[in-house]
Length: 225
Image 1 (cartoon, rainbow, N blue to C red):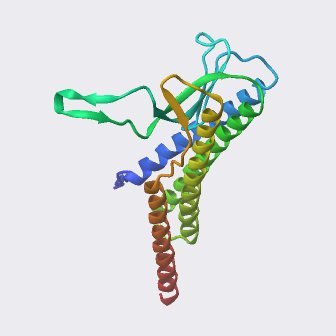
Image 2 (cartoon, one colour; image 1 turned 135 degrees about the vertical axis):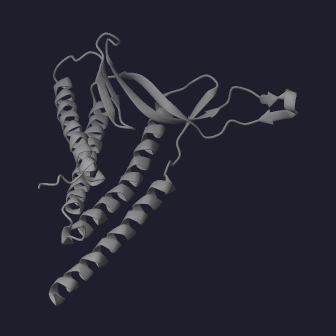
Image 3 (cartoon, helix red, strand yellow; image 1 turned 30 degrees about the vertical axis):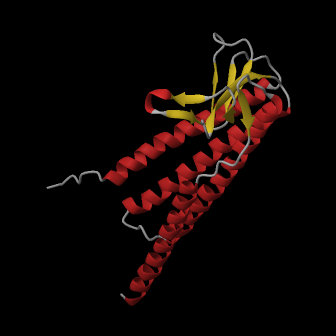
């Protein structure tokens, strides 16, 4: 009598990651093609968003290209108060948002387009590495020698990626502060490093060491059998 084993949650995660990986790969190819084509052809309604990375084409809504960048602003529009609760003055701090503006061909377009493609490429790589780790878990070999290396690489890419993201946000903030003005607002530029993201990367590094120790124990056990 054949008994059908139920699928483990790991199998479903592998399928889900495979769907995500294919989707990211398709979007990456399409984005690269559109950005390269836009350098030579008139593509109306092209929209680029670097953080978080995304793009779109909406010819019905826009007659030219648009770029959306993260901005940091200070409020200079006047006094803020709440007389009903006895507060005479309050301050708006750490205001962050997105600035959307028409975009022309040139260095700004090329730079942001390359950053967009790079971010999607890193996302595709991370998804592939995680899927390979889960496959070894599904096959009953979680302490395969390659897993410690994969997990360690994922951790370092996440940590480095956070520093790169913070640098990109700072540069985009500086660009807005240099070129744009707004009544009652003052564009500023400051670091936006997420310590939580860095700590998460460090935790994954610890997990990588656990995988490496498990690999050594598994190899020692195989030698003694």
